[in-house]
Amino acid sequence: MSRRYLQVLCVKLCGNLKYSQSHLYSTVVPPDEITVNYRHGLPLITLTLPSRKERCQFVVKPMLSTVGSFLRDLQNEDKGVKTAAILTADGREIPATTLMEILLMNDFKLVINKITYDVQCPKKEKLSMEHATDMENVKSLVHRLFTALHLEEFQKKREHHLLEKIDHLRGQLQPLEQIKAGIEARSEAKTSGLLWAGLALLSVQGGALAWLTWWVYSWDIMEPVTYFITFANSMVFFAYFIVTRQDYTYSAVKSRQFLHFFHKKSKQQHFDVVQYNKLKEDLAKATESLKQVRHSLFANARRESQ
Image 1 (cartoon, helix red, strand yellow):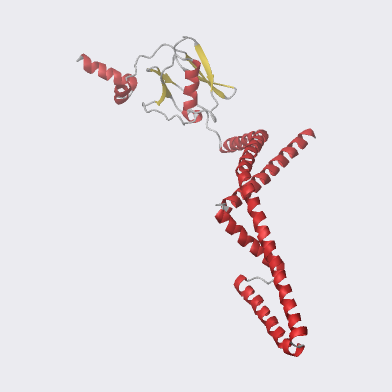
Image 2 (cartoon, one colour; image 1 turned 45 degrees about the vertical axis):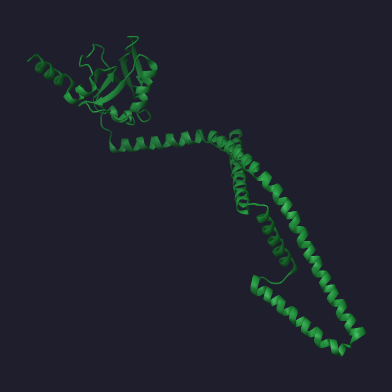
């Protein structure tokens, strides 16, 4: 009979038998009450610290503070607070991410070291639609001001990050640049040798035709031969256009042969051209971003000086 009476008493005090059995919190309410008042528009929560047995006031920023941050501040203030939780009036635990502005709309329970405190929140008048709109505008203005005040700090952090990224990219490119320079030198030498070989071949061809025309045969015999040689050269140039889809110019031929030798040497020396191009592109983007950040910082400093 006494057990049944204690069980009913526990239900009356806690409001939830399941909660009291699972959490085993004491139902004895201490004489030290927790009060919530408003001062200068901000909520002020007053409670007695369990270790020092002295009253302490916590100023709450409703739109910035959360239940979790409030409980952390409470534990940091008094190391004797081992466990702390906030429950609704019917015994349900409130998530730590809940804003204090939402929590203070209704009464709640604060549990400190397994002792439950009933907290009554003063009722605030409901804001009119016009007042609510003004509040939203104020919040937006505060956010813009915060962004403007911290923009320079953000830009300096970004500048430091870009400088580190540029140094890292240059460190990766340095060995690749050395390999590339060697491959380019060999490819340039081969391309120049090929051009000189073409000049030598044309010189030999012109000398042979002159020798055959003036010393062996006459012009009447060699004229058809030179015509067919010229026609064959035209066919070669036209075939080059069909294969490469480019006009036959000496600069185009030189560039094409240089790239041919370059890629051939790159495969032989395991030089990753795709990786090199990507690193160069990332370095160019980072350098351009750094210029923009520094230009913005210079403009801000100039405005401040004026």
